[in-house]
Image 1 (cartoon, each protein chain N blue to C red):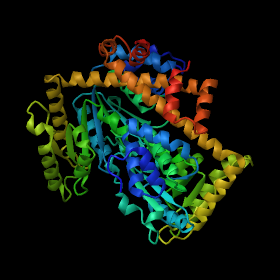
Image 2 (image 1 turned 180 degrees about the vertical axis):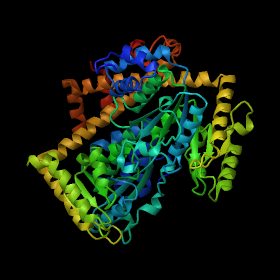
Image 3 (image 1 turned 90 degrees about the vertical axis):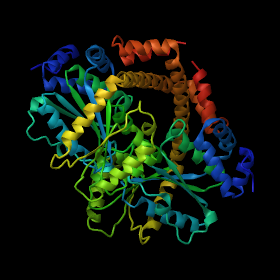
Image 4 (image 1 turned 120 degrees about the horizontal axis):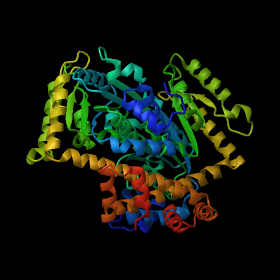
Length: 319
Length: 319
Protein backbone atom coordinates (compact mmCIF):
# COMPACT_ATOMS: atom_id res chain seq x y z
CA UNK A 1 0.00 0.00 0.00
CA UNK A 2 1.23 3.44 -0.96
CA UNK A 3 1.63 6.22 1.57
CA UNK A 4 -0.44 9.37 1.60
CA UNK A 5 2.37 11.21 -0.13
CA UNK A 6 2.44 8.98 -3.24
CA UNK A 7 2.72 11.20 -6.31
CA UNK A 8 -0.05 11.20 -8.94
CA UNK A 9 2.03 9.20 -11.45
CA UNK A 10 2.42 6.34 -8.94
CA UNK A 11 -1.23 6.52 -7.96
CA UNK A 12 -2.31 6.35 -11.59
CA UNK A 13 -0.14 3.31 -12.24
CA UNK A 14 -1.67 1.63 -9.21
CA UNK A 15 -5.20 2.64 -10.23
CA UNK A 16 -4.65 1.16 -13.69
CA UNK A 17 -3.59 -2.01 -11.96
CA UNK A 18 -6.91 -2.09 -10.14
CA UNK A 19 -6.04 -0.37 -6.89
CA UNK A 20 -9.28 1.29 -5.81
CA UNK A 21 -7.78 3.29 -3.01
CA UNK A 22 -5.31 4.92 -5.41
CA UNK A 23 -8.15 5.65 -7.82
CA UNK A 24 -10.10 7.25 -4.98
CA UNK A 25 -7.15 9.44 -4.09
CA UNK A 26 -6.73 10.62 -7.66
CA UNK A 27 -10.41 11.54 -7.80
CA UNK A 28 -10.07 13.50 -4.57
CA UNK A 29 -7.14 15.40 -6.05
CA UNK A 30 -9.22 16.33 -9.09
CA UNK A 31 -12.12 17.37 -6.88
CA UNK A 32 -9.87 19.58 -4.80
CA UNK A 33 -8.54 21.38 -7.88
CA UNK A 34 -5.21 23.22 -8.00
CA UNK A 35 -1.82 22.01 -9.15
CA UNK A 36 -2.40 18.38 -8.13
CA UNK A 37 -5.51 18.32 -10.29
CA UNK A 38 -3.51 19.78 -13.14
CA UNK A 39 -0.84 17.12 -12.81
CA UNK A 40 -3.41 14.32 -12.65
CA UNK A 41 -5.07 15.66 -15.80
CA UNK A 42 -1.74 15.85 -17.62
CA UNK A 43 -1.04 12.21 -16.78
CA UNK A 44 -4.56 10.93 -17.40
CA UNK A 45 -5.53 12.81 -20.55
CA UNK A 46 -3.30 10.87 -22.99
CA UNK A 47 -4.54 7.58 -21.51
CA UNK A 48 -8.22 8.47 -21.64
CA UNK A 49 -10.74 8.43 -24.46
CA UNK A 50 -12.03 4.87 -24.42
CA UNK A 51 -14.57 4.75 -21.59
CA UNK A 52 -18.22 4.98 -22.57
CA UNK A 53 -20.23 7.47 -20.53
CA UNK A 54 -23.91 6.94 -19.80
CA UNK A 55 -25.88 9.80 -18.23
CA UNK A 56 -28.98 9.03 -16.16
CA UNK A 57 -31.39 11.83 -15.49
CA UNK A 58 -35.02 12.19 -14.51
CA UNK A 59 -37.25 13.36 -11.70
CA UNK A 60 -36.45 12.55 -8.08
CA UNK A 61 -38.20 9.33 -7.17
CA UNK A 62 -38.23 7.96 -10.71
CA UNK A 63 -36.00 5.11 -9.65
CA UNK A 64 -32.75 6.22 -11.33
CA UNK A 65 -30.56 4.80 -8.59
CA UNK A 66 -32.13 1.36 -8.57
CA UNK A 67 -31.96 1.34 -12.35
CA UNK A 68 -28.32 2.41 -12.26
CA UNK A 69 -27.61 -0.45 -9.86
CA UNK A 70 -29.33 -2.97 -12.11
CA UNK A 71 -27.65 -1.71 -15.25
CA UNK A 72 -24.27 -1.71 -13.56
CA UNK A 73 -24.76 -5.30 -12.38
CA UNK A 74 -25.67 -6.34 -15.94
CA UNK A 75 -22.62 -4.66 -17.47
CA UNK A 76 -20.38 -6.21 -14.82
CA UNK A 77 -21.87 -9.63 -15.58
CA UNK A 78 -20.74 -9.02 -19.17
CA UNK A 79 -17.18 -8.62 -17.94
CA UNK A 80 -16.95 -4.85 -17.93
CA UNK A 81 -15.34 -2.65 -15.32
CA UNK A 82 -17.97 -0.09 -14.39
CA UNK A 83 -17.90 3.13 -12.39
CA UNK A 84 -20.87 5.04 -11.04
CA UNK A 85 -20.45 8.77 -10.49
CA UNK A 86 -23.45 9.98 -8.52
CA UNK A 87 -23.89 13.72 -8.51
CA UNK A 88 -25.59 14.76 -5.32
CA UNK A 89 -27.46 17.99 -5.20
CA UNK A 90 -25.85 21.01 -3.70
CA UNK A 91 -28.53 21.55 -1.20
CA UNK A 92 -29.57 18.89 1.26
CA UNK A 93 -32.95 20.58 1.26
CA UNK A 94 -33.89 18.53 -1.76
CA UNK A 95 -33.84 15.41 0.33
CA UNK A 96 -31.32 13.42 -1.67
CA UNK A 97 -30.53 10.11 -0.04
CA UNK A 98 -27.09 8.92 0.89
CA UNK A 99 -25.27 7.07 -1.84
CA UNK A 100 -25.06 3.86 0.13
CA UNK A 101 -28.83 3.72 0.19
CA UNK A 102 -29.17 4.41 -3.45
CA UNK A 103 -26.98 2.00 -5.29
CA UNK A 104 -27.66 -1.65 -4.63
CA UNK A 105 -25.72 -4.12 -6.63
CA UNK A 106 -26.26 -7.62 -5.38
CA UNK A 107 -24.02 -10.24 -6.88
CA UNK A 108 -21.45 -7.88 -8.36
CA UNK A 109 -17.81 -8.62 -7.62
CA UNK A 110 -16.56 -5.56 -5.73
CA UNK A 111 -13.44 -5.26 -7.88
CA UNK A 112 -15.54 -4.74 -10.98
CA UNK A 113 -17.43 -1.70 -9.81
CA UNK A 114 -16.29 1.60 -8.42
CA UNK A 115 -18.83 3.99 -6.88
CA UNK A 116 -18.19 7.62 -6.18
CA UNK A 117 -20.49 10.34 -5.01
CA UNK A 118 -19.73 13.98 -5.67
CA UNK A 119 -21.47 16.96 -4.15
CA UNK A 120 -22.32 19.78 -6.51
CA UNK A 121 -21.03 22.28 -4.03
CA UNK A 122 -17.58 23.47 -3.22
CA UNK A 123 -15.71 22.50 -6.35
CA UNK A 124 -12.93 24.68 -7.54
CA UNK A 125 -14.39 26.16 -10.71
CA UNK A 126 -17.65 24.31 -10.25
CA UNK A 127 -19.04 21.00 -11.28
CA UNK A 128 -18.34 21.79 -14.94
CA UNK A 129 -14.63 21.41 -14.22
CA UNK A 130 -14.65 18.71 -11.56
CA UNK A 131 -16.98 16.26 -13.29
CA UNK A 132 -15.11 15.94 -16.61
CA UNK A 133 -11.86 15.79 -14.66
CA UNK A 134 -13.16 12.84 -12.67
CA UNK A 135 -14.47 11.10 -15.78
CA UNK A 136 -11.00 11.48 -17.30
CA UNK A 137 -9.35 9.75 -14.34
CA UNK A 138 -11.86 6.87 -14.33
CA UNK A 139 -11.36 6.52 -18.08
CA UNK A 140 -7.56 6.51 -17.78
CA UNK A 141 -7.77 3.95 -14.97
CA UNK A 142 -9.28 1.46 -17.40
CA UNK A 143 -12.98 1.72 -16.54
CA UNK A 144 -15.06 0.52 -19.51
CA UNK A 145 -18.36 2.21 -18.74
CA UNK A 146 -19.12 5.15 -16.47
CA UNK A 147 -22.68 5.83 -15.39
CA UNK A 148 -23.18 9.43 -14.32
CA UNK A 149 -26.34 9.79 -12.34
CA UNK A 150 -27.90 12.91 -10.93
CA UNK A 151 -30.31 13.02 -8.04
CA UNK A 152 -31.01 16.62 -8.65
CA UNK A 153 -32.90 18.86 -10.93
CA UNK A 154 -30.63 21.85 -11.29
CA UNK A 155 -29.35 23.12 -14.59
CA UNK A 156 -25.73 22.37 -13.79
CA UNK A 157 -26.44 18.75 -12.91
CA UNK A 158 -28.50 18.30 -16.07
CA UNK A 159 -25.71 19.89 -18.14
CA UNK A 160 -23.19 17.43 -16.76
CA UNK A 161 -25.37 14.36 -17.23
CA UNK A 162 -26.50 15.35 -20.70
CA UNK A 163 -22.88 15.72 -21.80
CA UNK A 164 -22.65 11.92 -21.66
CA UNK A 165 -22.17 9.74 -24.73
CA UNK A 166 -25.68 8.39 -24.22
CA UNK A 167 -28.21 10.23 -22.08
CA UNK A 168 -30.98 8.16 -20.55
CA UNK A 169 -34.06 9.99 -19.33
CA UNK A 170 -36.12 8.13 -16.77
CA UNK A 171 -39.82 8.92 -16.42
CA UNK A 172 -42.59 7.19 -14.51
CA UNK A 173 -46.21 6.51 -15.41
CA UNK A 174 -48.94 8.79 -14.26
CA UNK A 175 -47.00 11.86 -13.33
CA UNK A 176 -47.02 13.76 -16.57
CA UNK A 177 -43.20 13.63 -16.59
CA UNK A 178 -43.12 13.27 -20.33
CA UNK A 179 -45.24 16.33 -20.94
CA UNK A 180 -43.28 18.36 -18.41
CA UNK A 181 -39.99 17.28 -19.93
CA UNK A 182 -41.26 18.28 -23.35
CA UNK A 183 -42.20 21.75 -22.13
CA UNK A 184 -38.71 22.32 -20.81
CA UNK A 185 -37.01 21.11 -23.96
CA UNK A 186 -35.57 18.15 -22.07
CA UNK A 187 -36.85 15.66 -24.61
CA UNK A 188 -34.13 16.71 -27.00
CA UNK A 189 -31.48 15.79 -24.45
CA UNK A 190 -32.59 12.17 -24.27
CA UNK A 191 -31.05 9.46 -26.43
CA UNK A 192 -33.00 6.71 -24.70
CA UNK A 193 -36.21 6.99 -22.70
CA UNK A 194 -37.03 4.69 -19.84
CA UNK A 195 -40.51 4.34 -18.47
CA UNK A 196 -39.66 2.91 -15.10
CA UNK A 197 -42.20 1.43 -12.70
CA UNK A 198 -43.81 0.15 -15.87
CA UNK A 199 -45.94 -2.24 -13.85
CA UNK A 200 -47.93 0.73 -12.56
CA UNK A 201 -51.06 2.13 -14.14
CA UNK A 202 -50.47 4.71 -16.81
CA UNK A 203 -47.36 3.17 -18.38
CA UNK A 204 -48.98 2.80 -21.78
CA UNK A 205 -50.26 6.39 -21.58
CA UNK A 206 -46.75 7.59 -20.80
CA UNK A 207 -45.44 5.67 -23.81
CA UNK A 208 -48.12 7.09 -26.06
CA UNK A 209 -47.35 10.64 -24.85
CA UNK A 210 -43.65 10.16 -25.51
CA UNK A 211 -44.22 8.62 -28.95
CA UNK A 212 -46.54 11.45 -29.84
CA UNK A 213 -43.99 14.07 -28.87
CA UNK A 214 -41.23 12.23 -30.69
CA UNK A 215 -43.49 12.17 -33.76
CA UNK A 216 -43.49 15.96 -33.64
CA UNK A 217 -39.71 16.16 -33.12
CA UNK A 218 -36.93 16.54 -35.66
CA UNK A 219 -36.09 12.82 -35.87
CA UNK A 220 -39.56 12.04 -37.23
CA UNK A 221 -38.84 13.89 -40.46
CA UNK A 222 -35.15 13.30 -40.82
CA UNK A 223 -34.06 9.72 -41.24
CA UNK A 224 -30.45 10.80 -40.62
CA UNK A 225 -31.25 11.58 -36.99
CA UNK A 226 -31.48 9.23 -34.06
CA UNK A 227 -34.96 8.67 -32.72
CA UNK A 228 -34.83 7.93 -29.01
CA UNK A 229 -36.25 4.48 -28.29
CA UNK A 230 -38.58 3.99 -25.34
CA UNK A 231 -37.81 1.15 -22.96
CA UNK A 232 -40.15 -0.08 -20.23
CA UNK A 233 -38.48 -1.23 -17.02
CA UNK A 234 -39.33 -2.26 -13.51
CA UNK A 235 -36.03 -1.57 -11.81
CA UNK A 236 -37.08 -3.15 -8.55
CA UNK A 237 -37.33 -6.64 -10.10
CA UNK A 238 -34.91 -5.98 -12.96
CA UNK A 239 -37.33 -6.48 -15.81
CA UNK A 240 -36.52 -4.48 -18.91
CA UNK A 241 -32.97 -3.70 -17.80
CA UNK A 242 -31.51 -5.93 -20.53
CA UNK A 243 -33.63 -3.98 -23.04
CA UNK A 244 -32.18 -0.76 -21.68
CA UNK A 245 -28.63 -2.06 -22.06
CA UNK A 246 -29.46 -3.14 -25.59
CA UNK A 247 -30.95 0.28 -26.47
CA UNK A 248 -27.84 2.02 -25.16
CA UNK A 249 -25.67 -0.33 -27.19
CA UNK A 250 -27.69 0.40 -30.34
CA UNK A 251 -27.30 4.12 -29.74
CA UNK A 252 -23.60 3.67 -29.31
CA UNK A 253 -23.34 1.70 -32.57
CA UNK A 254 -25.43 4.32 -34.38
CA UNK A 255 -23.25 7.15 -33.07
CA UNK A 256 -20.06 5.35 -34.05
CA UNK A 257 -21.40 4.69 -37.55
CA UNK A 258 -22.50 8.30 -38.04
CA UNK A 259 -19.42 9.99 -36.57
CA UNK A 260 -21.64 11.31 -33.78
CA UNK A 261 -19.64 9.74 -30.95
CA UNK A 262 -16.51 11.53 -32.06
CA UNK A 263 -18.43 14.79 -32.49
CA UNK A 264 -19.95 14.57 -29.03
CA UNK A 265 -16.65 13.85 -27.40
CA UNK A 266 -14.94 16.70 -29.24
CA UNK A 267 -17.78 18.97 -28.15
CA UNK A 268 -17.41 17.84 -24.54
CA UNK A 269 -13.70 18.59 -24.57
CA UNK A 270 -14.34 21.96 -26.17
CA UNK A 271 -16.82 22.77 -23.39
CA UNK A 272 -14.24 21.75 -20.84
CA UNK A 273 -11.65 24.10 -22.37
CA UNK A 274 -14.29 26.83 -22.19
CA UNK A 275 -15.01 26.10 -18.51
CA UNK A 276 -11.31 26.24 -17.69
CA UNK A 277 -10.94 29.54 -19.54
CA UNK A 278 -13.88 31.02 -17.62
CA UNK A 279 -12.45 29.79 -14.32
CA UNK A 280 -9.07 31.32 -15.09
CA UNK A 281 -10.76 34.57 -15.99
CA UNK A 282 -12.81 34.57 -12.79
CA UNK A 283 -9.56 34.61 -10.82
CA UNK A 284 -8.40 37.56 -12.89
CA UNK A 285 -11.69 39.42 -12.37
CA UNK A 286 -11.49 38.93 -8.63
CA UNK A 287 -8.00 40.38 -8.62
CA UNK A 288 -9.20 43.38 -10.63
CA UNK A 289 -12.15 43.90 -8.30
CA UNK A 290 -9.82 43.82 -5.30
CA UNK A 291 -7.41 46.35 -6.80
CA UNK A 292 -7.72 50.04 -5.95
CA UNK A 293 -8.92 50.79 -9.48
CA UNK A 294 -11.51 48.02 -9.18
CA UNK A 295 -12.73 49.26 -5.82
CA UNK A 296 -13.07 52.78 -7.21
CA UNK A 297 -15.21 51.43 -10.05
CA UNK A 298 -17.48 49.49 -7.69
CA UNK A 299 -17.74 52.62 -5.53
CA UNK A 300 -19.20 54.46 -8.52
CA UNK A 301 -21.81 51.72 -8.82
CA UNK A 302 -22.81 51.93 -5.16
CA UNK A 303 -23.05 55.71 -5.57
CA UNK A 304 -25.46 55.00 -8.45
CA UNK A 305 -23.32 56.87 -10.96
CA UNK A 306 -22.45 53.80 -13.03
CA UNK A 307 -24.48 50.68 -13.84
CA UNK A 308 -22.98 47.27 -13.03
CA UNK A 309 -22.80 46.47 -16.76
CA UNK A 310 -20.92 49.69 -17.54
CA UNK A 311 -18.67 49.07 -14.55
CA UNK A 312 -17.85 45.59 -15.86
CA UNK A 313 -16.84 47.02 -19.21
CA UNK A 314 -14.61 49.58 -17.49
CA UNK A 315 -13.17 46.91 -15.21
CA UNK A 316 -12.10 44.80 -18.17
CA UNK A 317 -10.11 47.77 -19.47
CA UNK A 318 -8.13 48.17 -16.23
CA UNK A 319 -4.79 46.52 -15.70
CA UNK B 1 -52.14 52.93 -22.70
CA UNK B 2 -48.73 52.96 -24.37
CA UNK B 3 -48.01 51.03 -27.55
CA UNK B 4 -45.68 48.09 -27.73
CA UNK B 5 -42.95 50.36 -29.08
CA UNK B 6 -42.85 52.68 -26.05
CA UNK B 7 -39.23 53.35 -25.16
CA UNK B 8 -37.85 52.32 -21.76
CA UNK B 9 -37.81 55.89 -20.45
CA UNK B 10 -41.55 56.26 -21.06
CA UNK B 11 -42.26 52.82 -19.62
CA UNK B 12 -40.30 53.62 -16.48
CA UNK B 13 -42.19 56.89 -15.98
CA UNK B 14 -45.44 54.99 -16.34
CA UNK B 15 -44.27 52.23 -14.00
CA UNK B 16 -43.33 54.78 -11.36
CA UNK B 17 -46.83 56.14 -11.72
CA UNK B 18 -48.22 52.71 -10.91
CA UNK B 19 -48.72 51.27 -14.39
CA UNK B 20 -48.29 47.54 -13.91
CA UNK B 21 -48.26 46.71 -17.59
CA UNK B 22 -45.34 49.08 -18.18
CA UNK B 23 -43.51 47.57 -15.21
CA UNK B 24 -44.08 44.12 -16.66
CA UNK B 25 -42.64 45.20 -20.00
CA UNK B 26 -39.53 46.64 -18.39
CA UNK B 27 -38.99 43.38 -16.52
CA UNK B 28 -39.33 41.44 -19.74
CA UNK B 29 -36.72 43.68 -21.37
CA UNK B 30 -34.32 42.97 -18.51
CA UNK B 31 -35.01 39.25 -18.70
CA UNK B 32 -34.32 39.25 -22.44
CA UNK B 33 -30.94 40.94 -21.98
CA UNK B 34 -29.18 42.92 -24.69
CA UNK B 35 -29.23 46.65 -25.40
CA UNK B 36 -32.76 47.19 -24.11
CA UNK B 37 -31.75 45.66 -20.78
CA UNK B 38 -28.73 47.95 -20.74
CA UNK B 39 -30.88 51.00 -21.37
CA UNK B 40 -33.39 50.00 -18.68
CA UNK B 41 -30.54 49.54 -16.17
CA UNK B 42 -29.06 52.94 -17.05
CA UNK B 43 -32.42 54.58 -16.39
CA UNK B 44 -33.33 52.55 -13.31
CA UNK B 45 -30.01 52.42 -11.46
CA UNK B 46 -29.93 56.06 -10.30
CA UNK B 47 -33.54 55.75 -9.08
CA UNK B 48 -33.01 52.47 -7.20
CA UNK B 49 -31.54 51.74 -3.79
CA UNK B 50 -34.49 52.15 -1.47
CA UNK B 51 -36.46 48.89 -1.80
CA UNK B 52 -35.95 46.32 0.92
CA UNK B 53 -35.34 42.80 -0.37
CA UNK B 54 -36.44 39.73 1.57
CA UNK B 55 -35.25 36.31 0.39
CA UNK B 56 -37.32 33.22 1.19
CA UNK B 57 -35.64 29.86 0.92
CA UNK B 58 -36.18 26.37 2.25
CA UNK B 59 -37.09 22.88 1.19
CA UNK B 60 -39.85 22.25 -1.35
CA UNK B 61 -43.08 21.71 0.52
CA UNK B 62 -42.06 23.79 3.52
CA UNK B 63 -44.82 26.27 2.76
CA UNK B 64 -42.70 29.17 1.48
CA UNK B 65 -45.31 30.31 -1.01
CA UNK B 66 -48.17 30.40 1.45
CA UNK B 67 -45.93 32.22 3.89
CA UNK B 68 -44.87 34.68 1.17
CA UNK B 69 -48.52 35.33 0.44
CA UNK B 70 -49.33 35.96 4.10
CA UNK B 71 -46.33 38.19 4.65
CA UNK B 72 -47.10 40.16 1.51
CA UNK B 73 -50.69 40.69 2.63
CA UNK B 74 -49.47 41.94 6.00
CA UNK B 75 -47.00 44.39 4.46
CA UNK B 76 -49.67 45.63 2.06
CA UNK B 77 -52.04 46.14 4.97
CA UNK B 78 -49.35 48.39 6.44
CA UNK B 79 -49.52 50.53 3.32
CA UNK B 80 -46.48 49.22 1.48
CA UNK B 81 -46.17 48.49 -2.21
CA UNK B 82 -44.87 44.94 -2.41
CA UNK B 83 -43.50 42.82 -5.24
CA UNK B 84 -42.98 39.06 -5.25
CA UNK B 85 -40.30 37.66 -7.53
CA UNK B 86 -40.74 33.89 -7.61
CA UNK B 87 -37.80 32.02 -9.02
CA UNK B 88 -39.00 28.83 -10.59
CA UNK B 89 -36.67 25.93 -11.01
CA UNK B 90 -35.05 25.33 -14.34
CA UNK B 91 -36.32 21.87 -14.65
CA UNK B 92 -39.98 20.99 -14.43
CA UNK B 93 -38.85 17.61 -13.17
CA UNK B 94 -38.73 19.03 -9.69
CA UNK B 95 -42.47 19.39 -9.70
CA UNK B 96 -42.70 23.12 -9.03
CA UNK B 97 -46.26 24.34 -9.10
CA UNK B 98 -47.53 27.16 -11.23
CA UNK B 99 -47.22 30.60 -9.68
CA UNK B 100 -50.97 31.19 -9.66
CA UNK B 101 -51.34 28.21 -7.36
CA UNK B 102 -48.60 29.29 -5.07
CA UNK B 103 -49.27 32.84 -4.09
CA UNK B 104 -52.63 33.45 -2.47
CA UNK B 105 -53.28 36.91 -1.16
CA UNK B 106 -56.86 37.30 -0.13
CA UNK B 107 -57.92 40.82 0.71
CA UNK B 108 -54.95 42.60 -0.88
CA UNK B 109 -55.72 45.48 -3.21
CA UNK B 110 -54.34 44.42 -6.58
CA UNK B 111 -52.60 47.74 -7.16
CA UNK B 112 -50.46 47.24 -4.06
CA UNK B 113 -48.86 43.98 -5.07
CA UNK B 114 -46.97 42.96 -8.17
CA UNK B 115 -46.17 39.29 -8.74
CA UNK B 116 -43.64 38.04 -11.23
CA UNK B 117 -42.35 34.57 -11.87
CA UNK B 118 -39.00 33.99 -13.51
CA UNK B 119 -37.67 30.73 -14.82
CA UNK B 120 -34.08 29.94 -13.99
CA UNK B 121 -33.46 28.85 -17.53
CA UNK B 122 -32.75 30.77 -20.68
CA UNK B 123 -31.49 34.04 -19.26
CA UNK B 124 -28.83 35.91 -21.10
CA UNK B 125 -25.89 35.55 -18.75
CA UNK B 126 -27.88 33.48 -16.29
CA UNK B 127 -30.01 34.19 -13.30
CA UNK B 128 -27.12 36.03 -11.63
CA UNK B 129 -27.59 38.84 -14.15
CA UNK B 130 -31.33 38.74 -14.71
CA UNK B 131 -32.43 38.63 -11.06
CA UNK B 132 -30.56 41.72 -9.82
CA UNK B 133 -31.60 43.55 -12.99
CA UNK B 134 -35.25 42.81 -12.22
CA UNK B 135 -34.87 43.83 -8.58
CA UNK B 136 -33.41 47.14 -9.79
CA UNK B 137 -36.44 47.85 -11.98
CA UNK B 138 -38.92 46.98 -9.20
CA UNK B 139 -36.93 49.20 -6.84
CA UNK B 140 -36.83 52.11 -9.30
CA UNK B 141 -40.57 51.72 -9.90
CA UNK B 142 -41.21 52.59 -6.27
CA UNK B 143 -41.80 49.17 -4.75
CA UNK B 144 -41.12 49.29 -1.00
CA UNK B 145 -40.47 45.62 -0.30
CA UNK B 146 -39.53 42.83 -2.70
CA UNK B 147 -39.89 39.22 -1.61
CA UNK B 148 -37.68 36.89 -3.66
CA UNK B 149 -38.80 33.34 -3.26
CA UNK B 150 -37.27 30.21 -4.69
CA UNK B 151 -39.08 26.96 -5.23
CA UNK B 152 -35.88 25.21 -6.02
CA UNK B 153 -32.89 23.78 -4.37
CA UNK B 154 -30.11 24.56 -6.83
CA UNK B 155 -27.04 26.54 -5.95
CA UNK B 156 -27.87 29.40 -8.29
CA UNK B 157 -31.32 29.91 -6.83
CA UNK B 158 -29.94 29.83 -3.31
CA UNK B 159 -27.24 32.34 -4.29
CA UNK B 160 -29.85 34.75 -5.60
CA UNK B 161 -32.16 34.45 -2.61
CA UNK B 162 -29.38 34.67 -0.07
CA UNK B 163 -28.17 37.92 -1.65
CA UNK B 164 -31.28 39.56 -0.18
CA UNK B 165 -31.14 42.18 2.56
CA UNK B 166 -32.78 39.68 4.91
CA UNK B 167 -32.75 35.97 4.16
CA UNK B 168 -35.52 33.90 5.72
CA UNK B 169 -34.99 30.15 5.89
CA UNK B 170 -38.14 28.10 6.23
CA UNK B 171 -37.97 24.67 7.84
CA UNK B 172 -40.68 22.29 8.97
CA UNK B 173 -40.92 20.05 12.03
CA UNK B 174 -39.99 16.42 11.86
CA UNK B 175 -37.95 16.34 8.68
CA UNK B 176 -34.51 17.03 10.01
CA UNK B 177 -34.34 20.14 7.82
CA UNK B 178 -32.40 22.01 10.45
CA UNK B 179 -29.73 19.34 10.75
CA UNK B 180 -29.48 19.00 6.97
CA UNK B 181 -29.22 22.75 6.52
CA UNK B 182 -26.46 22.84 9.12
CA UNK B 183 -24.48 20.15 7.30
CA UNK B 184 -24.57 22.14 4.10
CA UNK B 185 -23.55 25.37 5.76
CA UNK B 186 -26.93 26.89 4.96
CA UNK B 187 -27.51 27.98 8.55
CA UNK B 188 -25.06 30.81 8.05
CA UNK B 189 -27.13 32.17 5.19
CA UNK B 190 -30.21 32.64 7.35
CA UNK B 191 -30.97 35.91 9.09
CA UNK B 192 -34.33 34.69 10.33
CA UNK B 193 -35.52 31.11 10.77
CA UNK B 194 -39.11 30.13 10.38
CA UNK B 195 -40.45 26.85 11.69
CA UNK B 196 -43.55 26.63 9.57
CA UNK B 197 -46.34 24.12 10.13
CA UNK B 198 -45.57 24.75 13.77
CA UNK B 199 -48.84 23.08 14.76
CA UNK B 200 -47.38 19.72 13.73
CA UNK B 201 -45.52 17.34 16.02
CA UNK B 202 -41.81 17.97 16.30
CA UNK B 203 -41.91 21.78 16.21
CA UNK B 204 -40.27 22.11 19.61
CA UNK B 205 -37.61 19.56 18.60
CA UNK B 206 -36.88 21.57 15.47
CA UNK B 207 -36.53 24.72 17.55
CA UNK B 208 -34.23 22.98 20.02
CA UNK B 209 -32.06 21.66 17.15
CA UNK B 210 -31.79 25.12 15.63
CA UNK B 211 -31.02 26.79 18.95
CA UNK B 212 -28.37 24.18 19.65
CA UNK B 213 -26.70 24.77 16.31
CA UNK B 214 -26.88 28.53 16.72
CA UNK B 215 -25.24 28.08 20.14
CA UNK B 216 -22.30 26.52 18.33
CA UNK B 217 -22.21 29.23 15.66
CA UNK B 218 -20.18 32.44 15.53
CA UNK B 219 -22.97 34.68 16.86
CA UNK B 220 -23.00 32.79 20.18
CA UNK B 221 -19.54 34.06 21.06
CA UNK B 222 -19.55 37.43 19.41
CA UNK B 223 -22.08 39.92 20.64
CA UNK B 224 -21.36 42.12 17.64
CA UNK B 225 -22.97 39.57 15.30
CA UNK B 226 -26.62 39.04 14.54
CA UNK B 227 -28.08 35.86 15.96
CA UNK B 228 -30.90 34.63 13.75
CA UNK B 229 -34.19 34.55 15.67
CA UNK B 230 -36.50 31.57 15.30
CA UNK B 231 -40.13 32.29 14.52
CA UNK B 232 -42.90 29.69 14.62
CA UNK B 233 -45.63 30.09 12.01
CA UNK B 234 -48.62 28.27 10.63
CA UNK B 235 -48.85 29.89 7.25
CA UNK B 236 -52.13 28.23 6.39
CA UNK B 237 -53.99 30.11 9.15
CA UNK B 238 -51.61 33.06 9.32
CA UNK B 239 -50.48 32.57 12.89
CA UNK B 240 -46.97 33.80 13.58
CA UNK B 241 -46.76 35.85 10.39
CA UNK B 242 -46.80 39.12 12.35
CA UNK B 243 -43.88 37.74 14.42
CA UNK B 244 -42.03 37.01 11.19
CA UNK B 245 -42.60 40.55 9.92
CA UNK B 246 -41.42 41.88 13.25
CA UNK B 247 -38.27 39.70 13.20
CA UNK B 248 -37.45 40.92 9.70
CA UNK B 249 -37.95 44.51 10.82
CA UNK B 250 -35.65 43.96 13.79
CA UNK B 251 -33.00 42.52 11.49
CA UNK B 252 -33.34 45.51 9.22
CA UNK B 253 -32.95 47.92 12.12
CA UNK B 254 -29.91 46.00 13.40
CA UNK B 255 -28.29 46.05 9.96
CA UNK B 256 -28.92 49.75 9.52
CA UNK B 257 -27.46 50.48 12.94
CA UNK B 258 -24.35 48.36 12.31
CA UNK B 259 -23.69 49.51 8.75
CA UNK B 260 -24.44 45.97 7.60
CA UNK B 261 -27.25 46.95 5.23
CA UNK B 262 -24.92 49.24 3.32
CA UNK B 263 -22.20 46.58 3.28
CA UNK B 264 -24.57 43.91 1.98
CA UNK B 265 -25.88 46.13 -0.77
CA UNK B 266 -22.38 47.15 -1.83
CA UNK B 267 -21.42 43.49 -1.87
CA UNK B 268 -24.46 42.64 -3.99
CA UNK B 269 -23.57 45.33 -6.50
CA UNK B 270 -19.98 44.15 -6.56
CA UNK B 271 -21.18 40.61 -7.31
CA UNK B 272 -23.33 41.97 -10.09
CA UNK B 273 -20.34 43.77 -11.65
CA UNK B 274 -18.47 40.47 -11.43
CA UNK B 275 -21.29 38.57 -13.13
CA UNK B 276 -21.41 41.11 -15.95
CA UNK B 277 -17.65 40.88 -16.39
CA UNK B 278 -17.82 37.08 -16.59
CA UNK B 279 -20.66 37.26 -19.10
CA UNK B 280 -18.72 39.69 -21.28
CA UNK B 281 -15.72 37.42 -21.10
CA UNK B 282 -17.77 34.35 -22.03
CA UNK B 283 -18.68 36.07 -25.30
CA UNK B 284 -15.01 36.71 -25.91
CA UNK B 285 -14.07 33.10 -25.12
CA UNK B 286 -16.67 31.79 -27.54
CA UNK B 287 -15.25 34.01 -30.28
CA UNK B 288 -11.76 32.73 -29.53
CA UNK B 289 -12.93 29.12 -29.56
CA UNK B 290 -14.61 29.66 -32.94
CA UNK B 291 -11.51 31.24 -34.48
CA UNK B 292 -9.09 29.11 -36.49
CA UNK B 293 -6.48 29.43 -33.75
CA UNK B 294 -9.07 28.34 -31.18
CA UNK B 295 -10.16 25.38 -33.24
CA UNK B 296 -6.54 24.30 -33.67
CA UNK B 297 -6.08 24.40 -29.90
CA UNK B 298 -9.21 22.31 -29.27
CA UNK B 299 -8.02 19.88 -31.94
CA UNK B 300 -4.87 19.29 -29.89
CA UNK B 301 -7.06 18.46 -26.92
CA UNK B 302 -9.16 15.93 -28.85
CA UNK B 303 -5.91 14.40 -30.09
CA UNK B 304 -4.93 14.05 -26.43
CA UNK B 305 -1.78 16.11 -26.85
CA UNK B 306 -2.96 18.97 -24.64
CA UNK B 307 -5.13 18.98 -21.50
CA UNK B 308 -8.22 21.20 -21.42
CA UNK B 309 -6.64 23.33 -18.67
CA UNK B 310 -3.46 23.87 -20.70
CA UNK B 311 -5.57 24.59 -23.79
CA UNK B 312 -7.51 27.23 -21.85
CA UNK B 313 -4.29 28.95 -20.85
CA UNK B 314 -3.11 28.93 -24.47
CA UNK B 315 -6.49 30.15 -25.68
CA UNK B 316 -6.34 33.18 -23.38
CA UNK B 317 -3.05 34.15 -25.01
CA UNK B 318 -4.50 34.14 -28.54
CA UNK B 319 -5.89 37.25 -30.14
